[in-house]
Length: 209
Image (tube, rainbow, N blue to C red; front, side):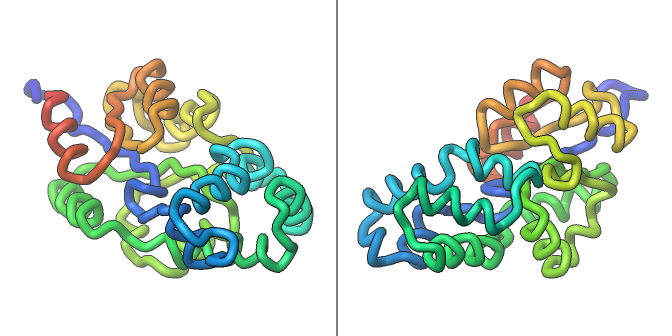
């Protein structure tokens, strides 16, 4: 790093970056009758989450409440109300920390890097994570989509996050598993890495120079 330049700030996504997110596994565990194998489960996942657009995207942005979400998902999937709610209710406990990423996060913190998060996350799940994981206090600040009524990959949530954090885009490294989110971050001037696993992401960050 050139002398006098700012130490990089890190902005982490949560799902499939810091917390395990495996919706196919979730479906096979919660609804084995409807998802007896991974192929069938994958089809059900697509109907349920619709690529995290549609009704689920509205849930991420805080624009739909659970009763309406349940009704919409029943129509999308053909599931009964109690089955839909079992999936919705099972998500928070399935978001378990990814050990390798947590180790990297701890090393970044020890080295003095400023840590932030920017995550598409429904309000009840955000509250669960905050209650359940003390290490979230390692982050200087963060933005959950449902609390600002915006969601990635909308440029507006990136701009809002940078303004809230008081950081310049060029000083930040953004890590996310979705290519569309990484692409928008790059367009806005952040250094961005598509996350597949912690070792790969750390190596890609090092290659940024």
